[in-house]
Image (tube, rainbow, N blue to C red; front, side, top):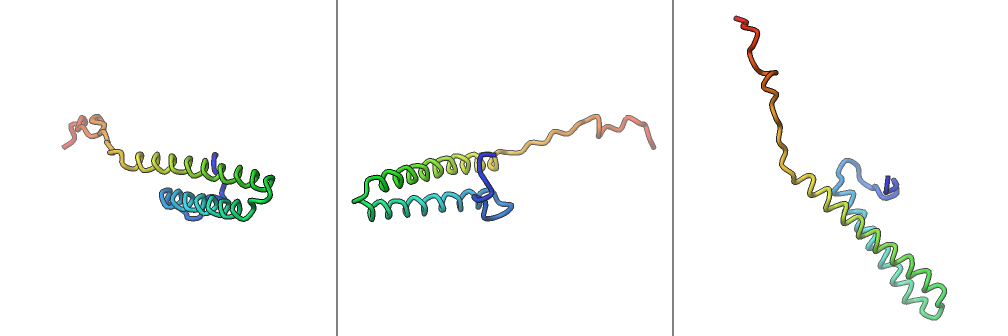
Length: 94
């Protein structure tokens, strides 16, 4: 399972879950950017924060791909085939 329960905030709606995950990743990225701006005088801290920010970007991309996959799957037309043998009247019942 690629995502942990920490990413799931709503239940039963995969699109709402993924959109909320995307928003959380963007908020985290913005937080890291602000911390980078505040820590310009400490290169070791900035390096660690840049790594964490890049990780949030990758997570955002993966959640975006998952959202597109779910939306594509839900948009597919459903076709149902009837088994004609099941519905035939072979018994000659009256």
